[in-house]
Amino acid sequence: MCLSIPSKVVKISEDKTICTVDTMGVQRDASLLMIGEDALKIGDFVLLHIGFVMEIIDENEALASIETYREILEAMDEEERKQAILDDDNCENRGNA
Amino acid sequence: MEKIELKNLYDDFRDGKTIQAYAKIIAEDAKKLKKPINIMEVCGGHTHTIMKFGLPQLLPNNVNFIHGPGCPVCIMPKERIDHAYVLAMQSEVILVTLGDMIKVPGSNGSLQDARAKGADVRFVYSPMECIKIAKENPDKKVIFFAIGFETTTPMTAVLIDQVIKLKIPNILFHINHVTVPEVMVELIDSRDVHVDSYNNQIDAFLGPSHVSVISGSKIYDKFPKEYGRPVVVTGFEPVDAMQGISMIVKQFIEERCELEIQYKRVVSYEGNLKAQALIEQYFEKISLFRWRGLGNVPDSGLKLKDEFAEYNAEIVYREVLPIAEIEDHKLCICGDILRGMAKPPECTIFGTACKPNSPVGSCMVSSEGACSAYYKYGNLL
Image (cartoon, rainbow over all chains, first blue to last red; front, side, top):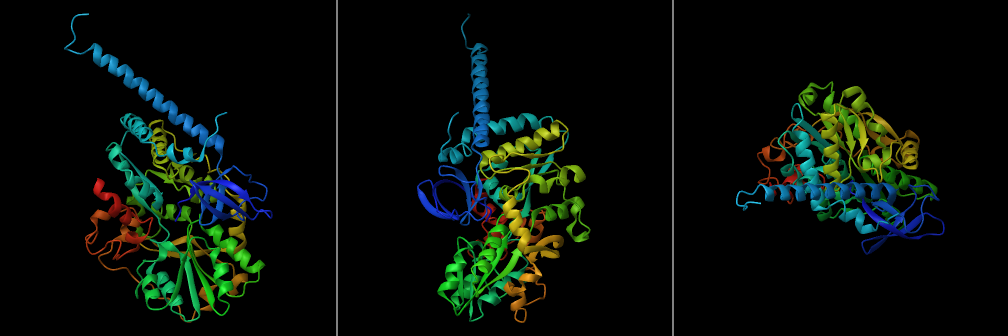
């Protein structure tokens, strides 16, 4: 019921009451009666819910979140790499250095 | 600056490695917790994400979930489900509602049963489809049975607005919209002894995603300030959920108690003001609305304002609508589950007498019900 899906705006009607959105290849119309008239432009990402555009997705915030995740993964990878080196250095089966 | 594509908005928020990374962060942070913490995810959609992606398996033992009542179909008392059935069975009525209502069991059966008996019941993707149905059937009364929290309320308001502006004479509304913050208060501070709110042990809330898009995070201000419960408004994807949980754990170890937004790409403090204005224009609060398992929750239900009485199916059809409160089946513990006091596997009929195709309670049949989440995904645990 509360699940809304991100979609991309591909067309806006002349009277700005309806737009066409593309959700991973599937196109459908959505009402714009819940958001400001001039708020939207083609190419924007929006949250779609039961036939309505509920909100415009803030691309800067989305990118900031994705950047955060990338940094976390890089930090994890770096930690794992260091641990792997440490494990190798401390390996009992290693010959004398 | 880098441009994102649509698939980033799906893939990056479902990435397995990122989920695992957050699991490690949470596990490390949780070692510093002074005591175990219980996080209530309010929304049924979050319950489904948590179960579908096996998130409880990834969390340490001292971080637990309590499932909340955020399933608008699950919390509807049986007598209101019976209203839908009774209205559907009127010969001049076309009952229109969202798909979630199709199999919800009432005293006489579900809407699917009503349809099998010849009632004209139509399940729609969008409330706006009512307009076409009404125009194609001018001799019928189209009743939109409106369900949902703040997420879907403005869509009903838009439909009412259009019905009035376009002067459509044959659409009525049966309103069952409810609001989230009031039930959150009820769970932690109820005057009703039956609710047992002080034993609920909720330490923090994972705030609903799309309710908050509409209402803004401002509606949760009181929880850290007056009730000492942090709230992190979190998205529905599994990475969102893990990040939200991580943010809550960090608040506890840093001894903060704040309202934060994890789902910043669509949630703001103020919310969608146009949607809020539409709700304000057509609806007002009912002082008491009965929730399954919780009894009457003050100020948690909405009704059409009196000046729109002619569109209100509860008034127009008051002579046929049942008013007595109806209790659930005695073996159904949906009420306890919705109050966060039990989990679905504790129910004696879970998965046996009560299954999605033969539900005894709404929690098993709604797409946001805790029981349906456990039934679908629970074998993974």
